[in-house]
Length: 466
Image (cartoon, rainbow, N blue to C red; front, side, top):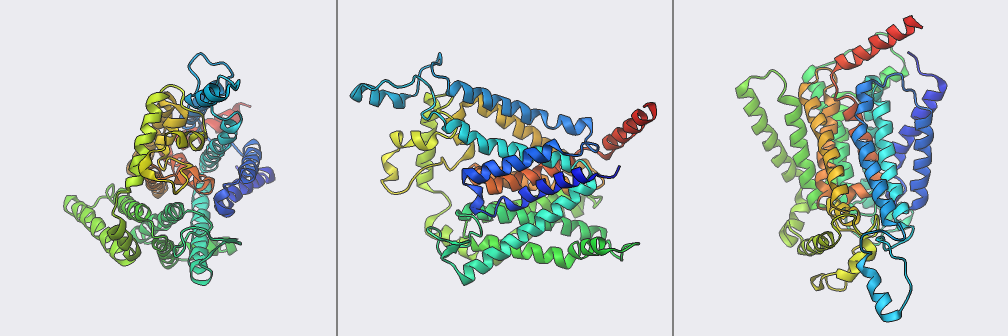
């Protein structure tokens, strides 16, 4: 079934959001979040659903449940007279100033719904990627576009650090001087972004080397020739090298270590299901670990210096984590309000953090979710994430054709989630949208091919009956 002009426009809008979201300083401004949400809603309303099977649609059920849970919690947090006790932050102005304040859980009146915009953006990006990538050809094309877009971002990051190290796009660079950040403000987010981009090149490179495909297409046109050039081992290797160099130039300890770890994971996920024999599989495992160590030695000099100077564990983050656990203990059920961590944390900020630095985030996305939404909502979100990781890994190990797509999705998912456990990369919309597009693409192609064939047969039967 050929795609109509409306479907092509819909796909263009979705791809444009996936590719351009990292550009405007990570899309942190509310205006960009609203703009990307608008484009994704338009893309979803005009999307071609002919390739979406029932199984693909069922993949979105856990996401829908998690979003519904967040909406319910946010509504309760902003309710003017909830049955549970109000936030402790209201007691100070009531007691000392005699102010009449609303008896609600959320510290801010509109902050929760404004913060929900970022949640909605990631959810829409994930949903659109699953729908778009239900067709295998569209999935391959999307990953190729994302890979080379990431390579261009990496090239910009490298050149910007060499030519204008005190600038981020057209703005003065205020932090992380001496380190590459690309179009992001934070180097840790940039490192996770470029690590994800490197995975988009590494796994197809393994696939090309294993299958040893080559030769000109039967009916060459400019698209097929360009696809052949971009899929050549030399091009894939160059893209991987550029993204890895940019990753190393960030100086991010966790970003580099976790990225190299997921490189090894991707190699193992791709090679282990192959019929290599037991001894060769053990050789693959040992070789992958050795390759990771060699890569660390080659590109990790800057990071190694920071590890020697500062160590692997940040005591300030540990203090912030302990304080966050205290907030969770006091607000187990409904949290303090989505997006309210910055407003609540100063009241319980430990003295060990000193007076320098603004802790507007918990530097751990799971902890911040539990602080702002409570333990039940965190449990729902965590179960949905684990369910998706399960499908990505089973698809990586069991699929036959295009198995490299769920391998990419699983590897990027592990990298993004693992890094967000000790930082906030997924809370930056520019990376979050890019991440959701890759993971959604991998998830859509994690199902066996037989399920899509059954969908095709059922569609043909319905057409004949009509």
